Length: 245
Image 1 (cartoon, rainbow, N blue to C red):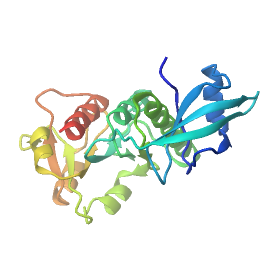
Image 2 (image 1 turned 135 degrees about the vertical axis):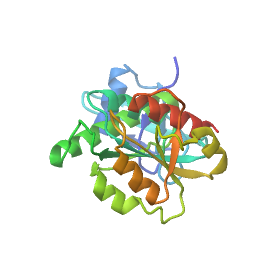
Image 3 (image 1 turned 90 degrees about the vertical axis):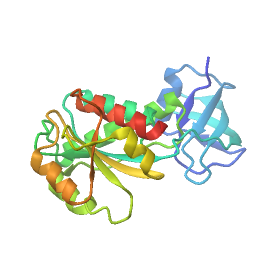
């Protein structure tokens, strides 16, 4: 049985005894680990990598572990891809977050664009983002990633475009498009450096006005081929090209 991986986003030191947070404790209890069993902690914001640890105490509410040795391993892609996505409806956003995390996405910006069906605001939006962040943590625990992608708060298209659309920091940006002049995603991947931004629409894609606004701001239209992919499929296909190239 593989050693379980538990997300613990705090600085650690060898020999320390610590009580896991409630969610992590429940995870360990569900796995039926016992005192003496090994586990791996990841998420240290200072040293990164992973920490070997072992369970010392299993309580009804809390689990205590002892931190052992640090292992400086990273399994992140060479390129940091920041994804902005018009949120697909139902459970498709959960699936998108999970698979994007497995492929090593650096961050995800949920957007309310013109064709977005899932309209989230206020407390409901905050709860959804917290849920998606938990989905990303679980995906990292499964896939071996040590850096959980950041889930940004939900933003309306116009507000996001005013903030991020200028590409002022020099990180190149592109959007997925079915237009005839779109550059193949693989060709763009060969031409860019260690970070990029990618935008895709929800069901129905971006509108012509949204694409025009991005292109006017210097964003590159990208193609994934002649087929019309669902938004969550398009996100995974683009990430596969950009993180594995």
